[in-house]
Length: 330
Ligand SMILES: [Zn+2]
Ligand SMILES: [Zn+2]
Image: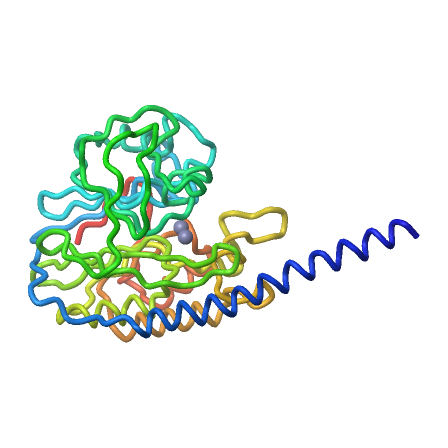
């Protein structure tokens, strides 16, 4: 009898929390959609170009090289002409020093002093270097001392300097911004996610002379449909490549607790019983096909093998694997 009573109370408690979360989701989604609709985005008058561009994944879920570490996080070294941009700093899930990022940088012969700037897509744990970092609104390249040059750090929200890599605080950029000739932040596109709440994410657009816009994306919570729409509103040039995370942990995921696919639940703007579905992947593929990119490379850190296979089938030779240590040359 007592057990039944406890079970009843527990069920009522869970139902109450869920009801509250669903209400918050409904309200938050409406607000985020209104925010997006209210943004006045105009064409960039002279975004400039770069002559050369390469993207070297330093942290992601897969690698062909056994000397490199992998994890469900993101850090890419973007070399645009002579500028080295670090997009995000990985997860460091095991709180190591050296972190997978530092280990891989060392193995690949990259020094922190080679970096010219850091660009954060968004402040989630798999991009700012850990759970504590997300909670404390900071970022760490490792869980031990890293000497960073006094470089600019851009983020859609304020991130304070970490004790592990003291130096500049982040400079917040929310509007579309030309960071350097040909290197553009497309500006935040807000989205309300179940559990993660109001999420501001930025992506980089690099305008490569004679080719077009190369989009480099962190988690893709904005949705690729809205990223494409934003890019077309900012540039006259065609979208040449789409590289990075689009968050489709469908029929599998990279962070599982028993049968629970955590990425699928936390990264969705729908209730958990709807969540991210096969139909969302199909819509994304259809949206990407409308711009016919020459290169499409999906980060495996937040998309399942099933989803990657769907992309491979849909894009054929244009599909490129994202593997740690394997440079994508544009
Ligand atoms: Zn992510
Ligand atoms: Zn995220």
